[in-house]
Image (cartoon, rainbow, N blue to C red):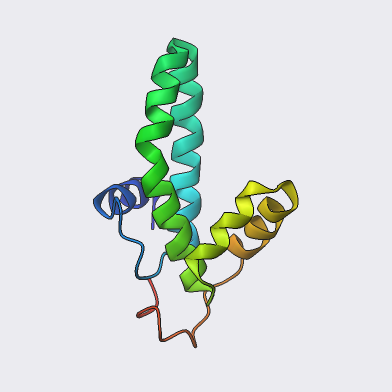
Length: 109
């Protein structure tokens, strides 16, 4: 999946917390969020806040789908509340797709 496809996929699944997301989909969307945040913050703090708020739900959704892809529940994202928990999430998000996870749907392309 390339950059454009990942953004399109994440925004079309704006609040879809079921299913699975590939590593490339997750990380390309993460890069998009960072780039948009940097660009918006250069223009205005209010615009940065609006952009961050607009991308919050799709970011949580793709994060949950990425965790599903490795066999974890999307509720593990609550670990983001703590600093150590965020490091655990990053470790999980970089893991390869688990082929034996049938309860979350078929493996992403």
